[in-house]
Length: 253
Image 1 (tube, rainbow, N blue to C red):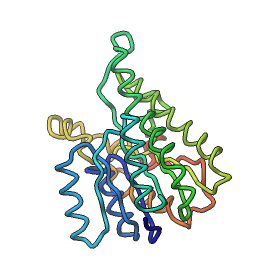
Image 2 (cartoon, one colour):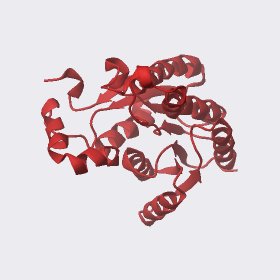
Image 3 (cartoon, helix red, strand yellow):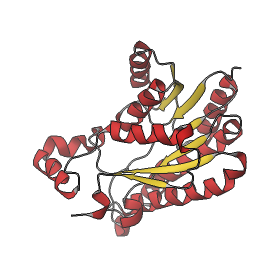
């Protein structure tokens, strides 16, 4: 068991924003623990980070599986003796369905991916965060948490509203231990999340920038920089906050 250096756990980190967050925190001096369900991609990401001089490990488990989350977070905490930062990056749309046609299975799968995963990982990490240096949890919500999502994305919006609330609730619950809890709310970020529409309707994808005050789509680095700040000592008096990272997209034009 070691308690030297800073340790960050990032769920859903084998690609997109999650991987860029892992890279940035690694550059900040953390040992980064990447989670994912694609073990082959995980191995490749670890090679990439290691080649950049970053200490990194991969743990493959499904963040919607309570037992797997608890077991793996415990294994990480026991190995390093602490966790300094938990980034609950895993999540997603999970598909689209109008409520009239929505199956209970679909409802539960989207809630599990976005809200259950945040709860499972946070609960398991708390004993180790208590031993961390400037410990914090960083969650991901979305504009959909306020707007209730677009057509067929109502349950996604509902799950992200839950993440917004649990962020504030965790912040209240953990303040006495010095554990800060914040969230980021990324706007439209150019990642594989949007790969299908980018490939099939590039003009529609490009037009999204017209609804953003700063006139461009976000990049993964735009998110990772904010998370780097929230995890740092510089943010030591910030908790229970949600930071919009959308270039003013939430205001509309």
